[in-house]
Every structure is written in C-alpha cells, then in structure tokens.
Length: 105
Image 1 (tube, helix red, strand yellow):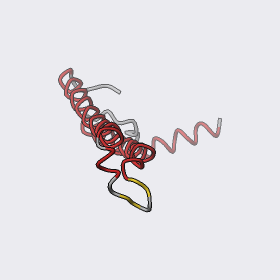
Image 2: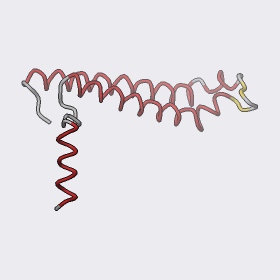
Image 3: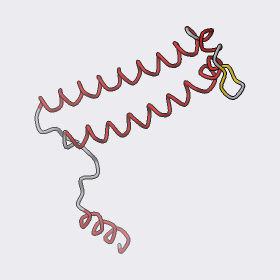
C-alpha cells in the first residue's frame, strides 16, 4: 500500500479518523445514552414484553456495534478505492497465473 503523494496520505487518514470518530460517537450514544442515561424513559416502552432500555443495555448496543463494524468495513473499502490503496488491484489474469504457478511447482 502506497499513496500517490503525501497529501493523499494525509487526506486518507483525515477521512479515516473522521469516519471512526463518527461511528464511535454513534456507538457511545447508543450504548451509554440508551443503555444508561435514558434507560428509565426507554423502559416505558415495551417490545415483545421486554423493556426497551433493558434491551438496549443487554443486546441493542451489541447489535448496533456489529452493524457499525459492517458500515466501517464497507466505507473503508470505498475509501481505499478512492485513494487507490485497495488490496485487490491484481488483474484476474495475473491472479490465475499466480495460482497456476503455485500449484504446478
């Protein structure tokens, strides 16, 4: 992985940090806010017999965290392609040739 210029590297890391801070803020708001700060207000709402605040504290924040990981992976792949530092830039023919060479020797 190499960047075309120093400016590309700086821009890449700035976008990466901005994305991470945004996603971590969402996770903090859901896990701390919904699971602790607003738990009493959310417990007034019941879904499937469970109090919503309790559900966020026990399971909801974990589901949100897993969804944020998926969002991060998708956005990082797009960011890697934008700055041309993605890992799958081998041509399919080169990949097939490399496989043939590895298995024939």
